[in-house]
Length: 128
Length: 128
DNA sequence: ACAAGTATGCACCTTTTGGTAAGTATGGTT
DNA sequence: AACCATACTTACCAAAAGGTGCATACTTGT
Image (cartoon, rainbow over all chains, first blue to last red; front, side):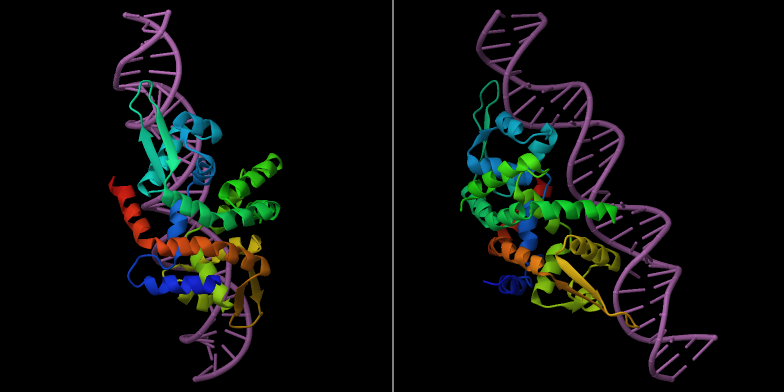
């Protein structure tokens, strides 16, 4: 289906929702500095908090927790607390989260394919 | 292809680039409050500045120009100034821009399909 | 002279987002 | 009774993104 078509469908819907197109809605879920990475690593397999933190290099506790919480209320991620001491908490994608991961594949491929061009462009944004 | 696979491919690449996965790169291009909408309307057909502004309801001149400029340096959008008075400037998607639009289709559909759930979740983000 | 029409620039402010560094909780181990 | 591991919290600050309103350019038609 052409982008136009899928967007027009959502425009029809927009009369009853605050979103004009589904793209808007979807981007609110995935935008956040560390969310792509979190999705990346959780798509692989469930992970304990500390384990995940080691994967997502450079993230602070505050940020990681915050982004995980948002993904959790969005229903993308499931948090399981084993109530042990020391704490053991496992994060994983929900089935809904996996549908999102699937929808992201083409975008991810597009990004991978054009990484160098995008990179140069981002530099140009500042320079020019 | 599974999300994992396409992401792992980009991870290999990441040794030479600042992006860990293509998703990161792609999201930098489309994130911006009005960019989804701009893509939406330009995917349909080329538009003059004022025409586009009327489509993207609520956007200010400053924002619209700014987002268009970024999309332009990113190579997504082409700007054509006809050097007339009063000014006539036309914006349209480049071929590269259309490849992006294609890659966004599944995400757009995903968003459209789950608009109501996402909406509720965004409210919950604030409440809880 | 001057108003109309069109795309853009700029100065200033508010809001949102992200970052740093410290602190808390708890039961088992020493 | 001090200490460890682990997940999470908090207070505070910096940077980025977004918003408002006014200014500018220039030529055609009045």
